[in-house]
Image (cartoon, rainbow over all chains, first blue to last red; front, top):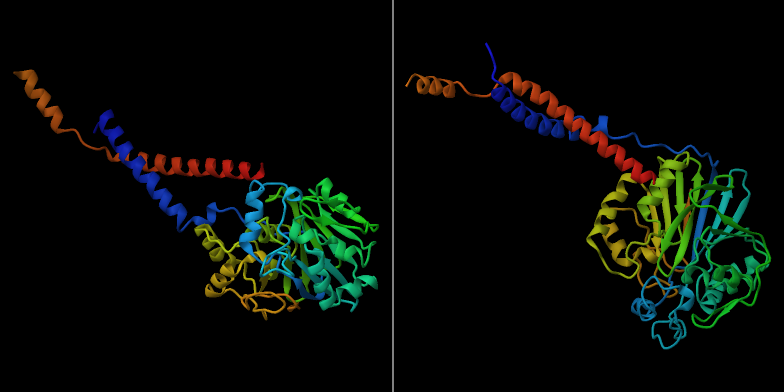
Length: 361
Length: 49
């Protein structure tokens, strides 16, 4: 029996199309595990600690969203240098004595396996007057004066996390400090006593302690069971670089503590999972998750809410730039968001607010 | 007349070759696998960059 070339080619075309489509179906269903690369597991051993207590000193970075956004837009948009934006400091009804500026700062108390402790102050806030009141409320001013805070961990250079540096340095000028790579000269100048008239930021107390700039893309071991991880992120108001803290809590898993999470919550969780030993068990996350800081919503944020549960996080102590809208949606999706008490100008109980505490471990 | 009859006879015999279909299935499946390998390689090289 002979087969004509034309018939063979017709069969080849039909079979080729069917084979291509069939393999697409098979490879994306029953054989999908064969084609997906195995997820790398972290190999950096950071040791272990016993427990971590976080006190939210201030999570209210500003008191009126539209005023903050308006300040940036009037200055030329979200990418304008934060040191040349004339921020609103008077006449805001919800503000602190009319000032729209608040700040973000968290006190972290780590207990090690041998029972010793270290305190880390994560970020300094924005409005020095507001921060003085918050530091006093939580006893941070006294701790600084008595050299009881071991490290000032500056997550990034943003106004609401850093411009309140004076309120810290006036209590302890020689506090050891770490910043992520990407800090601008203005930031270093502010540490050395610069005044910036346009944004109304100043510091009259020069930093005299050790200052470490952390390289991006690396895990930096700080104490047993404590490490930082630095990202080369470009952020609004011309800020670059952000770092987060990771704690390995014995018998619990990893706890990740962020300032603002501009690197993105999924990027952060993935990086922790891929870089740090035990990354397959992220037990808790705390801090700003930067999803709806201005209480707006984009459908792509729904994907984040859907993606978070696969990390198996048991405790979410989020606040600040996470946004109340996001918290509502996360709670609705069954995520373990920890409620706050809505005190000291935090507006809702949806997440941890000013003066609230959470203990991991 | 003879030539026309022969032509009609040839036309009726045309169809799809099963041998072609089987070879096609193998080639088509192979092409898909090759495609996803290329996409995968490109995806990871872009991620690395």
